[in-house]
Image (cartoon, rainbow, N blue to C red; front, side, top):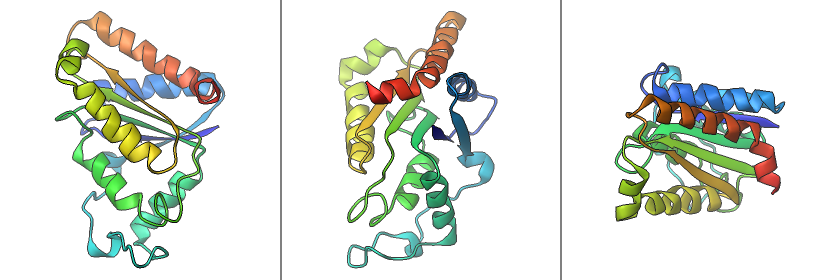
Length: 193
């Protein structure tokens, strides 16, 4: 299976980068091919210019070359994965802007939907699972990202995996990296279960 792994963090050497590496390692162990989209390193512009604004009256609108290139990258993969830090109980602005700008009307929703079989969103969080659950942040993120974006765009087998307390003890970070590797290793089996 070919998996587009979209990474959004200012530093590739961050813990998020280690999660990315662990996930890709698991994919490789299972015989999958990963294509990495490092949005910051590539200089992706997340702002939505008028030429890429959804046009509800023209679902066949031709978008900018930058958007068409990203859509082609998405289309040549069978599944999607995302690695990002949790900021303000969501994904960073660059990743959100990538979705806003690239997953457009008539291509990802509306008259056409994404054909991908599976998606996993992996977020690193400084807070504890209890802290997220106390105010429902975990559930709110799941509704927003899984239901509101992935499922809405046709990806029914989608999950949000949050790695909590990643600024704490080394053992917690090591366990998170092992979970990310396992997610990659079992990626297709999870899609078929």
